[in-house]
Every structure is written in C-alpha cells, then in structure tokens.
Image (cartoon, rainbow, N blue to C red; front, side, top):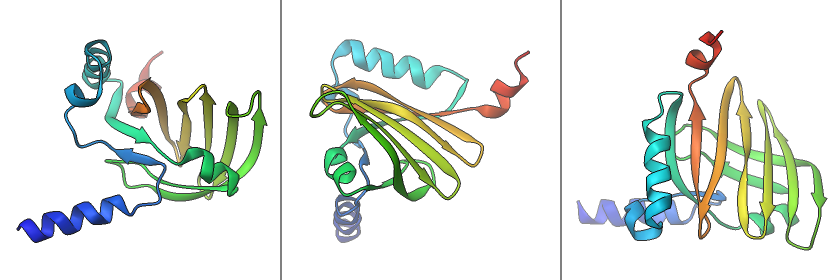
Length: 148
C-alpha cells in the first residue's frame, strides 16, 4: 500500500500541467480570510466543482508557446496553443490560447494568475486566492441556463 502511494505521488509530481491540485489542508497554505472565501465558493450550488490549485511554471509555458494542463478533479487534459499574448509589463500579461474543443484566457498581474476556460460546453474560472494558490471553479451550466 505504501509503495503504491509513493508511486502515485511521484506520478503527480511529474505532471507538466501548470495547474497542480493541492492536497494539503487549506489551513496550511491559506490565510483565514482566504480559507473562508474558498469555503463559501465550495458551498455555492452554482458550481459543480471547486478545487484548490497552485499555478506553477506558467511563464515558462508561455515562452514555449504552448501550455499543458489537466484540470484537477475534472477529466480534461489539453495541450493549448497560443492564440495571442499581450504584455503590459515584463511579467504582466493576458494570454489567450485554443485547443481542440475550447479556449483559455489567463491573466497574470504581479504574480497573481486568474482566468477563464471553456471546454465543449463546460465553463471554468480560476480565481486567485494568495501565494500562488487559486480556486478552480467549474460552473453548473445546467442550473445557470435555467435562470430566467
């Protein structure tokens, strides 16, 4: 059992995804106010999933003109090609990329990453929390489409 756990952890670590699911308790990585914000997001029934993630290696992926990601807790893996990128300062940018069934817009301002992902009818938001951590939110489109 222990060997399987170590092997699984090693495989997760080797992922090239810029979104890494955080398995630690939010109390270990977020302030009290951000923990509260994350909890409120998780309790909203307009969302199907709310996952704590760490955004890593984004600048390098942007320089390489493509971005790999898999959305934690959601079975989507994609290699996204750059459509456009606008720099407002050296490390601040708006990046737009496309993949076979979707589009991604990521905004990086002063080390804070947030954005929006569309994939084959599914809609996701990345809401920055703090210290490189963010909430990856999948919207409940069935419910939202019923609102008149």
